[in-house]
Amino acid sequence: MREMTFHSADELSHAYILLSPSAEERKAAATALASAAVCSAPGPVPCGVCRACRKVRAGIHPDVITISRIADDKGKKKREISVDQIRNVIADSVVLPNEAERKVYVIDEADTMNIPAQNAALKLLEEPPRGVIFLLLASNAEHLLETVRSRCAEIVCGAQEEEPDAETVKLGMAFLKRCAEKDEAQLFRWCASNENMDNAAAVAFVECTIGLLTDMLCRRKSTLGMSDREVYELEALMEKCLGMLRVNTSVKQVFGLIAVSAVCE
Image 1 (cartoon, one colour):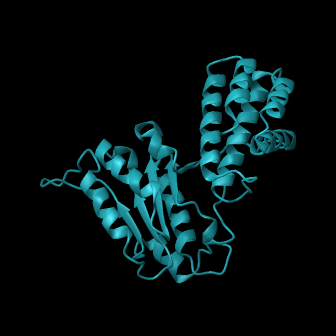
Image 2 (image 1 turned 90 degrees about the horizontal axis):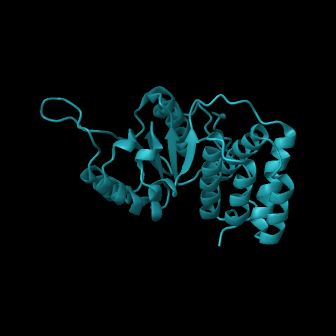
């Protein structure tokens, strides 16, 4: 996972899904993002040393609220996060922060939210109150509704993948610029000129492009004029293409899908 620092908290997206099989890695990522949201330093954030950052690390910042599965009368955690818990978040989210300029809701094990809870959360993600950020921690994003996922930036925590080489990054940026221009004919020609690359190169290109799109959602890179929704949809398309390549779908077929689907309406 890249180090999560931002020029200012204004660069943060309103919602993130933090993915990892490790609860420790998910918590570390949530701490970094929550710290960035409430950090009192002029920038970059999080500074890690201000009072707000220290309180987040200690788990005592009043504007960083964690929601998790509650225990039953026998002290055993329930299987799901309930809709009532999310309704409580909805009610609380319109209350002004105590200390910071923003409030952060950390939904631990968000993939255990039942369907009514996810539908309630969707309303928050579609129309979030000003200055409110949601962090959904999950081990399996497939357990979250697609509508929920589409409204969040997804970050894979603890990933130690090699950095793409300069040529792959250049290829990814060239592709994204064509998507941003919304010129279907130009995009089709670009895909046709690159569809003969081998599977390994195609996987590297798609993985690199997903990383660039994540950087856009996290405001580490310019969106090239694309809306957040367009970036979300393009990232979902590239994730689909990556899955196809990993089950040995032909590169030409994958680039054909990209050619007809990458330009958002």
